[in-house]
Image 1 (cartoon, rainbow, N blue to C red):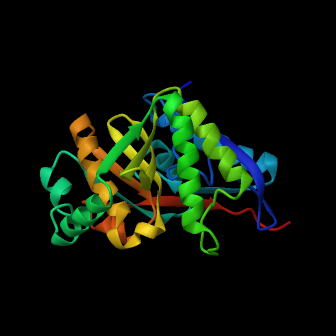
Image 2 (image 1 turned 90 degrees about the vertical axis):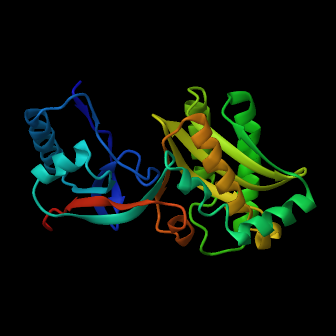
Image 3 (image 1 turned 180 degrees about the horizontal axis):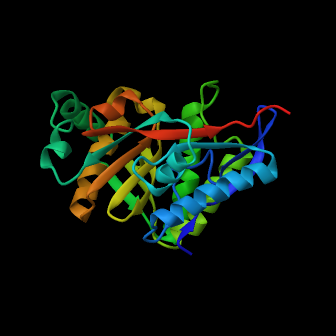
Length: 268
């Protein structure tokens, strides 16, 4: 196989639509490819067009990774490749990126206050036997944080979301690709990150914190320690992934966006 692209057929707004198999879970969509040449990408573009015709479906390819093989395939299909969701990341090889926020007076003060409540410590889990209970704690923390809020995105009270994270942790955790990081103040879990580690990059997929500790910015304090831990491990990039949240801009030194391509079939 030189190129592979996993797709699904479903209904969006009443129209039969082909989307990436990982949509809407994945923050980046990309083809799997091994040294593809122009002829390979031409063939894949033709195959996508033929699939849409055979299924009598629209094609919707959101959150395409910029500069990837899937972008090149979509450009062969014609139409517009437009900007989609913002993405951002941190270059961990630049020491200043690790200290710019952590050294601010605000966080020095909050770090002291949190340590007075209980000594602060960062714990990272990557082995299956510790990942499972860590996921249970993460889900409970996230659920408490967003309880009663109508703006919660993909809450764990949705059984499909709960099952999806459980399956993801089981499958990728066995390969050492899942990292659940926890920040404790004494015995109290005050913040946590659910991430993936692959090819020198920490992909920060979802975060949570205890709202009782809100005034001490536990999420920021955890992130500052996690950035340092990733750099010490030898990782070169901390990827905040999809979403233009304001807190990311204080840390990220690389800002960009995913891409979107869509082809809508004429009404019959």
